[in-house]
Image (spheres, rainbow, N blue to C red):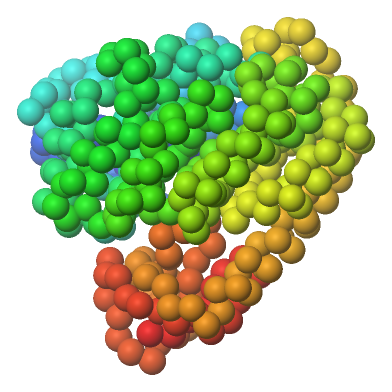
Length: 430
């Protein structure tokens, strides 16, 4: 156990990761040695940044806290702090359940943690982070909160109303990261497409992306997560015409059945969804679409699910993730609907959906064999270098396995000829 050192455990989404990295920079400014997500406990202080979105994520957060609470009781660490979405939502319950934690903080008051340790918050470093990602890419959070009213989602209950960051602050952060050697930027928010409406009185994502694209040293920009209703169509020509904006869009659709979409309060129909997807593909040739779908929503019938399967087969998403409905307390769904689809049925539907998508992904990958693609090398493993194309976001998307015929440098782009596939992943050579 090292004195004057801190372990930061970051759970959940990349938006949480950004908060952890901001806190890490402040700890470093106060003279601490910082260890992000260590394999074993390294510091005498542990901070856990929790997720509170769905049951599995909440369970992981609680189990992680309990594990370090045991270490605190055994005096293997001196201080244990918990922050993030779980403690934002369940503060009083957690205080009673796990008294070994020295202090709980929510999602937005983590700066208080520093003063509780007798340390300072340095506003001059407010846009600076210690990256826990590889040095060549970073996540940039452009907003907090959400103004959508999806019936199943607890995020607005945790994060509150949408709050866009000022463009000049985002630009300053990107420039700072470029100076650190970052080349690839994942723009993130609970809803990218609402950006600017609260402070500029109009949807301003296209203008923001243009400004970031103009910054020297920005090689790739990738967009997570778009909302289909009120989609800002002026974004599409910007994506088409700017060479450093990846032809990639993460747009969560959740379902295709009009009945389920209405119950989900998604404010869009199936016909409107199909028209939007067709327009996106028409305006940005070659774009790869990532979506997220949900099965087992209350009252989802076999007919609703078959509609979803046909939708996936027709739309042929390049990237797709899916999950089973999980009832979240205090949401509209939990209050007004009964979680009446059996868990076994949810799992069967999930398995069928992903089986269909696996076939589609394999067919799309087959068409890349013989092409030469620009690939960013992320890391070196025993048998391959591991990289990604502009169509692949870190952690969630397929990778490119590059043979070791030549020495390659991580964090560098190379032209890679695709020679084969492994279902979701590509295989290639320089």
